[in-house]
Length: 302
Image (cartoon, rainbow, N blue to C red; front, side, top):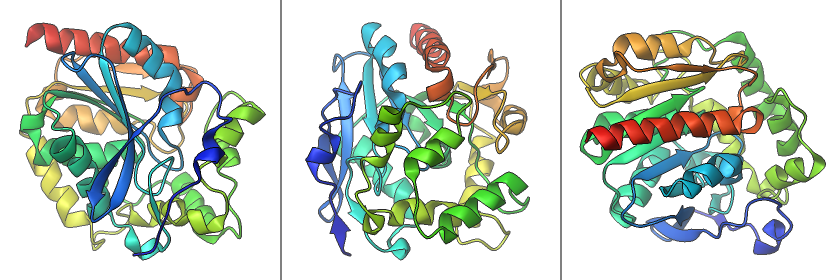
């Protein structure tokens, strides 16, 4: 496959994110950028972003977690951030995204007892990994995400988003992220989200993601997601939801998770107020508090 790498100078003026990534080979020379900081023997928190962001999204969540002595691992999904970017949409599949993240976290970094935090596609990938490799996890916090099977159509707001991403002549990723926040991003923040994508040739990953979400029962990814739900329905690992109160796409989706996953029972689930889809931008300090408390309780109990 033809692959592009965003020139490093595109990230030189990104403010508030001084973290240098490791480049992890995940598939025949394909490299995933991954920040890995904090004590190697500390409890490990993995923070995974979604569409159309990158690890920068978690900058204000990372800081208090690192200050609390945790090991924090933040990958950029393939096609995003400082990771390599295949140039054709057909190079991206749901199964490949799951396998690329699995390879990075388990084969290359050899992580165990992972406290996984997933938002948007970070959750679609993470819930598959949790179902398929539960022995690698200590628990999970899911925020504004889901594991769709296509048996129930996605909301109208998502359908409109899908049409826009796949059909727009040119994507402004900075504006896309801004539209998913309650607060207005600064121009520097919007520029940071645009940084990975010098031109349209780099945007195949962004363009492909909405089409990979199972939206009909016969979607290619639907059987694997149904199988994952069957496994999750038996999973006792601690599972906590931290959805925001103002996301038009995922609002209420936490109720489904809480009712289906045994590990979600008796957990102090949180609704983060004053936040839209990108709660890491609207209320990062609150999300960090939830994650830190979760890690403390799970690690203290284990």
